[in-house]
Image 1: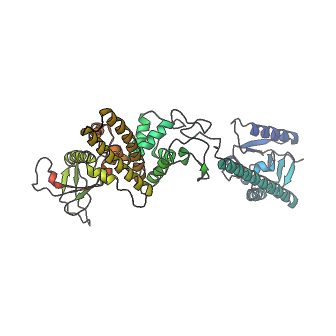
Image 2: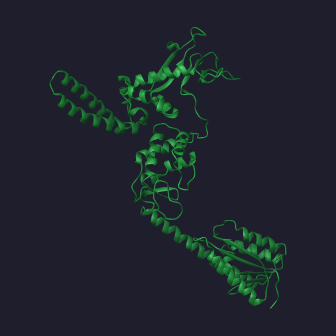
Image 3: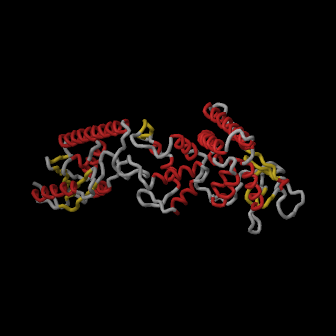
Length: 467
């Protein structure tokens, strides 16, 4: 038996659930015993723990061993079994070529020696690699089929971190996190930006499942995950209803996906400081007004740039203009025009049209009821009982109509401008913007009749209303 003084021992295990490396330790112990039996000296032990040879992932210890063999620093290899070295035939061929070039002939397994320099030894190694590859592929197919069966039944796949909003069983709602998901979804659907809700989560002390602060990408991920509205996802596709109760409604989920997965949406924009950005038009040339601060004061203005078709002749201070527009929006919410505009349902949406008709009918009933009470035809108790029933029905229809027509930001405030006025300062800027945009399409700012005039001239403002 030849003497070897620079032997490489290689050990690998595909999955180490406990993290204790028990499988690797057993392989190493057996390989050391084989080296002792042969009187060989082990120069180094190369260990890849929890790394599959079939997955194609890098195996740092294996790569280092190949380098050492190629550079002549190793004269033999001991491995528990050939499938610890390779489960893909292409890797075997690379290994055999490296050993042949380095004139390393002794590859020892606990079930026998493999002489890669001779045809029979290489044939045996190839057969073993082919068997190992087939076994790995069969295992993968069985695992994939099992995962498919679990997904089709609507049950959750176990393993890995639990999803935010659910307990460790992946089915039960987490009592502290599920309400956070509902609140976050409501804020986004009301027009609040991802940056704003992410900041709110961090300020509220809410953390991810891993205990980390939130980022806009992770907030978007859980809000657009169909799991949240009770759907089972497998390999990136929704394949049916899940066994758990949804945290959000399917309608909310679809609207969140439309809003948050829009390719035109950017989440890396700087914080907004101007309430009316993008909503103002120049009365001179029709271009969009931009923020143009002057001497520390916020302004909107028509800016000139080389090649731009702008007049550069319209500027207005932001504070007074925003205050005026907000008051106009709140007043507009109390107007009959706003109510009529809200009920202009899309022509191709039968459900929305039916709801609009029901809302109009309930509104007429409320007016008739008020007239009957004023004429003394019904008592105060009868009026209150009927009013409460109609209002409840009206509120439910308005909420559903708002979801269908994407007008959530103002649906609850129609006819309640004073209530919104009292809460306005408590809303963050992104929610204020959402309310304004839901009511105001744009405003054209005319040139000042008297340049240098102090205060705001309302005649300069020509609004175009959505509702």
